[in-house]
Length: 382
Image (cartoon, rainbow, N blue to C red; front, side, top):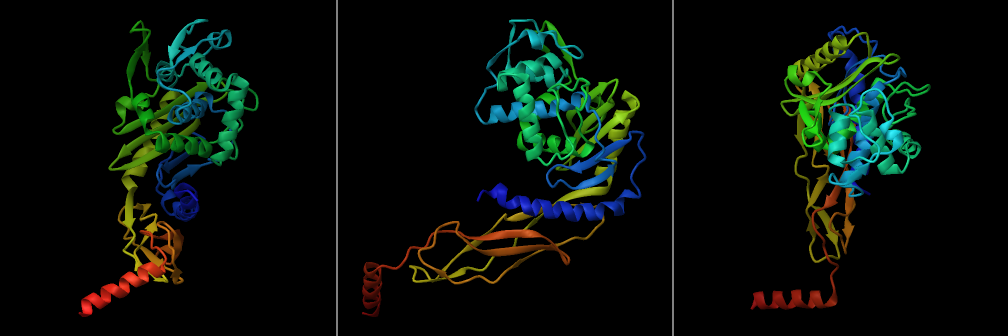
């Protein structure tokens, strides 16, 4: 079982606890004009504020967060590289809306395509990358929807890779936050692009200006993506980091571009002013007894070795880790072998459980080993 697979239930339980405590702080949350919004901390997934966050709405170019995520996953898995040359098809070159005016037969690197998508929201670049990764835009959209399902984006249906208004192309503020968090937490290098204010393509011949105006006005801004169409109005997934805590504020269907930036800034201000991130280490565990082994006990450690929570400032919180009784091990014992569980609690609230694993291997006693030990004792007695 992988570490990520094991820890996910803990993450879910922490999130459930956090959802239960969100209402306490919601009474002092700011008023915003956008009809749908959410504020989440990225490492724990704690929801700090929400307003009709599960209402399906057209997302405009915020759609491209999923496109960028799939590109980043392809890069990090080695399927493609940032230096790969990406050809431009007639379909890609014909895309309207925001674009970098790609020409049929032109080739740009994956790196430059990412610049065009993240900084300038190029629909033509998004389409070219979709075709490059999946062979067709239809195949790429299938990948987008499959990945959305894996991330728990329960109210999302993608119809394209760029976000131009299409019937049935819908998502929610919560779902946008989920894919934003996945991108920022698993592929943090993307902020090299999402924090860039100005850049260029084609050896400086074509200038790019970031559509996210918070980069110049909000302290700690790390991204992430704007979007606007006649149907979607003004949307934004805004991320920022301060004091080791990163937040994502998603705003949908704001009445104006100024409103979306103001609403996101208010939500981020609220989060940074009222919450903090704390990491609680797991105290040392007792050794586990071993029978028929070359050692009578083996040291144990907890996986994970710490737990991180987002708490309200001014709160006094402490996490306890209670080991459950362990059975005596019978050699041979493998390194990393699961020997028990630890229960994590915040007060009386159970947050989740960790594994107790062995710190090293313990071989089984052999007749030869026992003879050597016997001779050692004789030598010492003499």
